[in-house]
Length: 101
Image 1 (cartoon, rainbow, N blue to C red):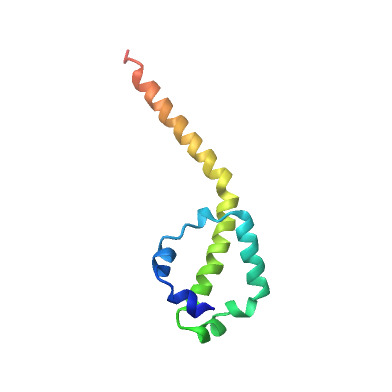
Image 2: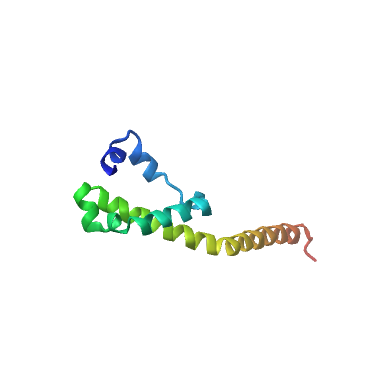
């Protein structure tokens, strides 16, 4: 249950240090299915009845799933940007080696 999860030692630290970039697509799909299946449980009003912390946690879960989708979509763009920045750095180094005329 939500209460037992929230009572676990170290949950706060896990939440704070959570990285949505590490959500695997298959895990995200299973969480999305869970969100659909238990849609009412993730409604803020209903979640708040479980505990005061449950409502914001439910919103946090939904937001991280959505953020994970965005990260997956922009992944190729980030990789391209990283490559271009590396190439730019290499070009800058090469041009620094050319003596001034």
